[in-house]
Image 1 (cartoon, helix red, strand yellow):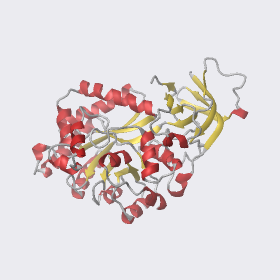
Image 2 (cartoon, one colour):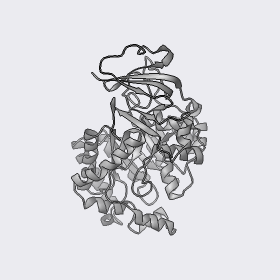
Image 3 (spheres, helix red, strand yellow):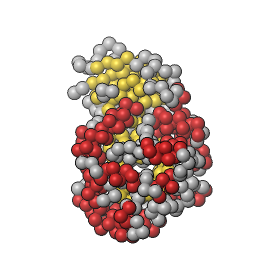
Length: 422
């Protein structure tokens, strides 16, 4: 048995009591403004689980603790549950700073992609490296995320675009799950772009995804989800339906890249297929919001990509007004958001989408866990849940976290009940 006692916590954030019927899985609409906190608190960890929380005035550990307990004095500090980042492309090879220069010179994301850049550029780079090399390139990004306070993450394939290389990506994702303390969910995204060799033959590539890629992914149990970039210039609603039909036959639950650059129909298609989430959503209106409000599909917003591509931000306030449980994720990827710092994503959400700090914390923790089917174990400070937490440097309140967006505020990270070396 191992024990950790955190004492004198200035503010313990996202404290939830377990209910007999299970924990509240997410917060939507007006409830996103609720962020239960405890001041001057203690938290006790036993092995990999949260075993107790409470106010210091009622602490049972003032005189005696179990033998071997590691005690952390968090005076002046805030403790958060680890972030649950439900949309990343963390596994990739090389970088795309040349496209950054193209963007500065005025080319749009679509124009860069049409010239062979974008996803196809990443595919070419990834196809040239071995599986071991790809894993080695990804590890520093994994450590970076952990240092930023992320404890659970979804990672997509989609830069392989061949059967061999999509499987290579997914095996690297599995290795990350096995060899690092992150809780990982894996998504097969073969339908990320049409490869150059299938130009003007998209139908043949969709057939390759359906007849070869999906069965191979399923046979090795490499993915939890299946995703499609349902967007103008990429994959249509009909393509998306065919791919989802095939994926569901193998037990792969859908997710959707939708409505980033136009009203694509991807939101409604995702809802039709019971997608766990629809992501991006810069272009949405009442039809999409009302459809989402009548479903269990989570709307995931990716302000880092919106910032980097200099687009209009998703209408978070209107979504929340419709009762939706908005989610924030990083979309960490080499082309449209080479950043995985959820602190910065929260700042963008507050400044550019006018979300409150309480809404941003809910979106990045509790709601993010729900968008990965992980809310039973992650996303809140709840007795019985996995002890994934981070302790900040001394700061006045949780609001300060998004306010001081360039300050490195994460001081101590605990994942699976173990203190991580940063």
